[in-house]
Image (tube, rainbow, N blue to C red):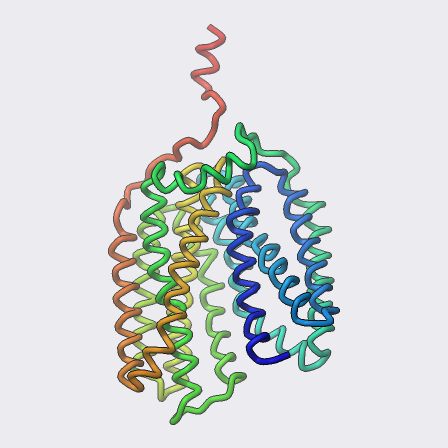
Length: 370
């Protein structure tokens, strides 16, 4: 296949992922978790197997569309955890799931590349298909079996997604501040990879990819982030996390000639972004846990769309401006992170969950009996 066709493969996966956020993520509000997650993981395993056996580009691209959509099950896991956790431990539950998602993000290229080198591309995909199938069996066995109560049909649920932004003003704020740091996240990582690949550094892709392992600090910080969010507020955690990410960005902007400084900068940057995402997601779910799938769907679609601009502008800035472009990308990312910290610190007072249930409260039930 030509390089242009190969370049469409990750694009197909991303399009599938966004489609899954819109069409599949709201199903967490309507389907029992053990059936929904098991079905999606089975579909993921099947799509990976088809990709492994694809005879040509058309089948391969179609398979990656399904892979992207089914891989959105990771976002469903966070929504399900937030729905079923007690309110006082919701952020901890979401952060625990986020740690697993972040591990996948950080280690996927390293593990996938290693398996491809040892087994070849097709067998690598079959290994992941087998793992997805094992996870499907575990989901069917271990996840909750209660079906959420939903008064609306599937079409009505999809039609109700856009009005959620009007119905929940805090959702708009969550989208804005989340989009700011995801914009900065993509901008920094793309710009860093391009800068390290160019002279005078001239690092190969493997060496650049190893820097992603510094993000393991973010995984270690996530459980602590969840507990801190439950004890304080998501807003307080987001503010601290954004300042941490900003400090990491400043180190990256001034220390590209020093590998230890790059590693420390990336560790702080990734830890700040991962922690803020966990806190922000728990805040979105808390708006109405019984509609957590729909709320998370709107949040993630706009979050990824905003972040895509960071990927789009990094390369033109560096290619057009050269070394000054590196400083400009760092300044742009710093501005986005500090603005997210400022916006994220608003509304620091803890408020009880609203619209968390259509069931009558205990006093209402007693009053009904009287």
